[in-house]
Image (cartoon, rainbow, N blue to C red; front, side):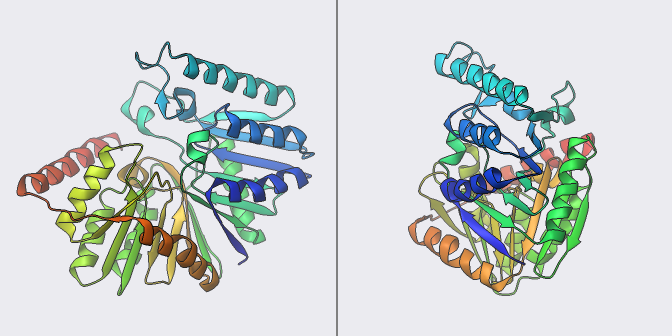
Length: 358
């Protein structure tokens, strides 16, 4: 399957903007965050200039509450002039787009129940003219565009049609769990309710690893750490890269504790890496929107791709894995018995709470 690896925002945007300007029939964009800053304006300008007949944006309601990685309605942010200005710019951008015929919808409105608060549509998916699709982890905001990340451009028509259908289902408010396999890629769409069944495939690949596993992700949690710990215990070389400047600092400390008790080689990326990837035995590259965390495992709607194309996997090793390992800081981790017990207790508590929702 012809698939392109696009690393960081500029490389991704160079390819995507050309596709948007060339579009004739449709441009469908699904994102977790859509902000009226310079990056959002780039997207807006491209959509306004595109000759496509049907232009749509799906954004999660998360982006109506969080701007520039900050909660708009937190007391400390209510009177922040920069945040208020970005909120106005975002609303203006949306109004201009809708006035020009671009349809915009927000998924997963917040509600009073815990499920409605936690359940997010975390997909990053773009489909253009039913001929090309993008999946990965990049959102349309300045802070996200500054992070280390990646997207994949797919132009195998059957796979693009599968992703096109998923966008339409979501647009109509009908999330669908689905799985399809082609010659060198497997695509899984998660509906936020039956995610554990889909993730069984990912956990199965970890369980069958024989030589090495490389993971890069900012927010890894259980149950993925349990499987990685078991793999390390049977002699598989497990290396994890997670950001030193994590936008959620809790996860950096969590990674230290988990890696210490698991015997995993932990490296800290110098900066913020939002990239989500798992390379198993140099045979399977798992990527997409999922962070390999518990929320994705149970509650988030996601797109996961499992690539097996040798050329693509080699490119990932040379352009992502090797340079990120080479420049990351090696961490010597030590976990006390208290820390281990705290992790076990926390895991059980969170699992019990989410199980009550479902």
